[in-house]
Image: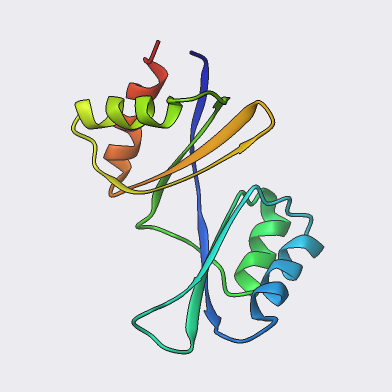
Amino acid sequence: MKLKVSQVDVWAVELQDRPGNLAAKLDVLAEAGANLEFVVARRESGRPGTGVAFVTPLKGAAQTRAAQRAGFKKTPSLHSVRIEAADRPGLGAELTEALATAQINLRGLSAAAFGKRCVVYLALDSAADAKKAIRVLKAMK
């Protein structure tokens, strides 16, 4: 099984929970030329009136500056691994079983299939866990 595995930086921004706030943040990134592959936005259940959005990738100085102007920060505590592969039944189970066998605990997982391809984002607790996960995933047959 051929997997394309890489570590990625995730950027986060706090949102006011009101119509148009996410659109305004994403518009700043679009104007800087960002072609986002992954966006997750949600309300903060413990903080009424607020939300958070996570995005990746941002490339180059212009996109980084635009993100910072819009309030995005590279998340120092969210260590993410991106996996791209041919989609097929059972792939998610195989990936997570390999990580579990290596004693790697996941903080989160997001995945989507499109056509015959899929992309999976893993969130891990530490940079060491992310590096270990990359080694384990690249060694999968």
